[in-house]
Length: 219
Image (cartoon, rainbow, N blue to C red; front, side, top):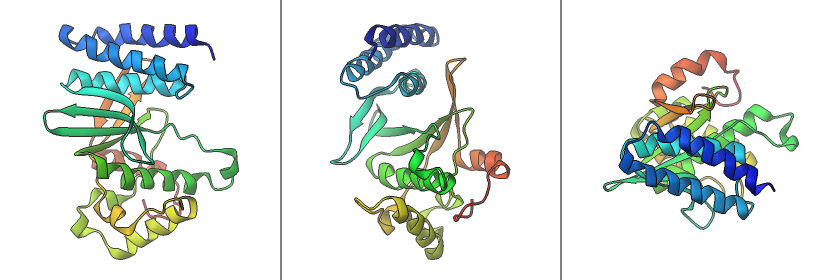
């Protein structure tokens, strides 16, 4: 653990991001910076993930939200970013595409199941749920999550549940969680330039569908 290096990096990025914020928003961003340093001291975060959180937090702060990072939202869930604006709440989960060595032979299915499970689980706890990824990554978003619950077919829900159940058993992803899950947007994060671009899920899926290989779930 190199606290001095971590602190230097997040302070440098905070200063860079501050240039795009109003004066009265700067304390909010500095507070996120301090939260990340405290969590690094507890060995709860790493620099690559913290950089992504900080960029997304800056985007939300610039649009009037207050932001917390690594927030406990249930007995089993800690979200990357929890934002509030008025009566509305937003959760953003950041995905880098990493898969553990144990899933070297089923990387796409494992990653797909992780994305689906996050949409199903986290979206219960907020008004708006978003995924975020670096611009170098592609998120496999099933088209089912682009539809309202009353337009989702039972067979498609069961197909997603079967794939999730292969990887998530404690607890299982419930049928109704998939039925009622909602995805508000996708953030594409440009780390080098220090900004995040928000896209609607439909536009993101149309942009990436041709680049994705087919797995057990139809994208």
